[in-house]
Image 1 (cartoon, helix red, strand yellow):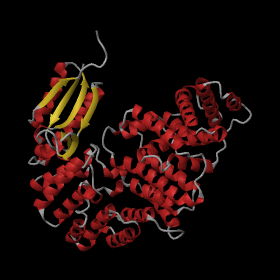
Image 2 (tube, one colour):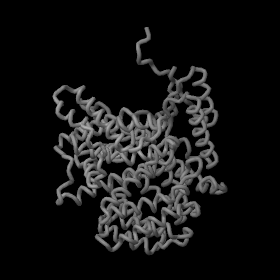
Image 3 (cartoon, chains in turn cyan, yellow):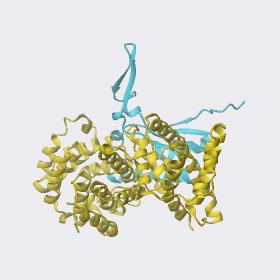
Image 4 (cartoon, chains in turn red, purple):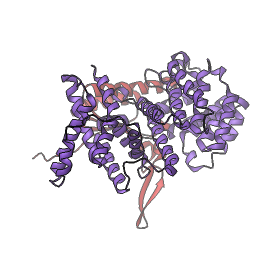
Amino acid sequence: MKYMIMMFGGLGAAVRDRSPEWITGMHELLVTLDGELREAGELVASVKLMDPGQATTVRFTGGAPVPTDGPFAEVKESLAGYWIVDVEEERAVEITSRVVGYTGFPMEVRRIMDEAADL
Amino acid sequence: MTGTRIEDLLRAYAPQVLTTLVRRHGQFDACEDAVQEALAAAARQWPADGVPDRPPAWLLTVASRALVDQWRADSARRRRETAAALDPTDQAPAADADDTLTLLFLCCHPSLSAPSQLALTLRAVGGLTTAEIAAAFLLPEATIAKRISRAKRTIRAAGARFEPPAPAQHGERLGVVLQVLYLVFNEGHTTSAGPALQRPDLTAEAIRLARLLHRLLPAETEAAGLLALMLLTDARKAARTGPDGSLTPLDEQHRDRWDTTAIAEGQAILTRTLGTGPVGPYQLQAAIAALHDEAATAQDTDWPQILALYDILTRIAPSPIVTLSRAVALANVHGPRAGLALLGTLDTNQRMRQHHRLEAVRAHLLERAGDTQAAHISYLRAATLTANVAEQRYLTLRAARLQHQSFSAPEIIRE
């Protein structure tokens, strides 16, 4: 089963007041985790998004789509990146817990719907 | 023979086989597909069966058959061409240098977008497979396949033929070719992070193609300049990133890890070239890269000379990016405040304001000017603007170091 594991928040919020050691540790954790998931054949995709401050939101305004600068959600609730893993749910939660254990920020695990008919 | 050697062989023969096929049958797009099939067949069979005695003839035969299969599948209307393609009398491709050049011009056709030019050039001239190109650009294979077939349709719709550009257009078209090769190089140079293990080395591929172009057009000073620039820049590759993919800036690199052979070759090409024709941006940038490479330590860098070269570059090919680099040189000659003042002139440029390099350079200069607080804000802003993970990490760390001065960071950044 495929799961999407989502991280939220802007870069600034996550690292602004952190020490260099913390930032380095965070980076090492992500690189190690990526490598492990890849090695284990569990990783489908690993995506980091640019800071939500750089986002454009397109809204339907006055009968037409209008782009405006900035993210749709609050910066701290904006998607920052995600992994897609092909694992059992417990494993997806375990992976997520490792990251949350380090950062302290909440993350979300969502199952990805199947494309093929399975009736 | 190892897999890598076979790949090298295939990449070297690819343009030669393709141009021979196009000369015989026209139809660049169909021929290009056929050559891809032949390369794939060779990659499958040669490692097991050994490399044939005449590899180009083998490839041409297999590609011709693939072409015939395509035509048969299309319809019976091409019976005449089919007979010609199967004619066994002349099966060795002629290694015509001009044809390879024509192929390069065709792949860098001005009707194509830059991403299409890059993909098509790497496949048709570089001999890379669709899968290899996809891996290099971290894109799905289907995306690159579509991009290439669309590019070939666009070329056909634009009425382009397999012939060299008219003399009047030669300079302009060559400019596009140089730009495409430089883009390939930069793509490999900047995105050195990521899961690099399976990525074909784009910088190496760009250098190989620039070398080919320089050999085909030895009198073109800018083609020589581009090759020299690539060699002199790529020479610092090993010192540029740490084992964990972190970025090391020029002034903190271990210079004994620079590739002296590449530097010597770049210098030789540059020395041979300068003064033999018009001086263009690639030669100037190569000359600047050479000055950096010649300095035994960062402190030994001949900044006044570099500034002088940027002054010329500003005159003949002004751009915001040149101004940005010139600001660094200016800061090193006349102090950080002089550099910062020049950077200020770029703030009105809408595109530069969103460019992480402007903010990153400003942060460096502010730090050197002792304005820690402003530098911190600039580093963080630059970090939110970059799309490169290694750069983002570097900038974030620089920002954090300013706030936590007790931290003895350098080994993380230096190694």
